[in-house]
Image (cartoon, rainbow, N blue to C red; front, side, top):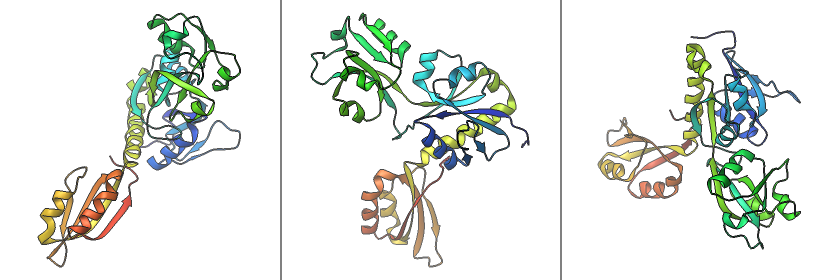
Length: 294
């Protein structure tokens, strides 16, 4: 079923997740065109209106019915305590396809080795509520202060004894001369909606479509397709070599002494797999990228 009127209001994260999110939607089949200094990008789907919002605000906008569905972080759902429904986890971020971490970090030359060593000290973070709960649950009395930006510099400038900051690789933390002493929270992007939108059949249909295709695009990033021609008498040996998502596709060629074999495999296996396939007699091996795997 199709409609010429928008069905859902979609919240897209502005900031560090903006570029990878727009890229993910494009690979999923939606092209989003941004206008300069405009928070209402165009999307090539008449059933969706899109808005760019700070990732921290999206949970509350969905809870209040301002948005129907959006992408935000698990961290900000916990921080805001918004009453929303998590449709799915989408494991991607600004530099990688792995979860991010909120970590407790101190100066590299400080005497602090464990969270307990920070009792009575000042902690700077943007993730105020989660950090307060972390120390409270651990029974450690600290002074947690909200950081309005440049959190990594707070320790260097003597404004805090430690920070709780988000990182994917730890590179920025180390670049500021800091040392990680504990992990506070593992977080990732999530697709979320309101119970009211989920209960609406048309909105739910559209949300499930978005989820299906986003997940398919993410899954395809770690997989590739392989096609090859295999001598019929070598087919059993070739089949023993190939891991694949499901059973391989096998077709007899016009020359019945050869078969065509097609598989989908993990990208990380290909560099070792192709030489083995070649050694077993496969020819005309073609590797190709996948857009979506559903």
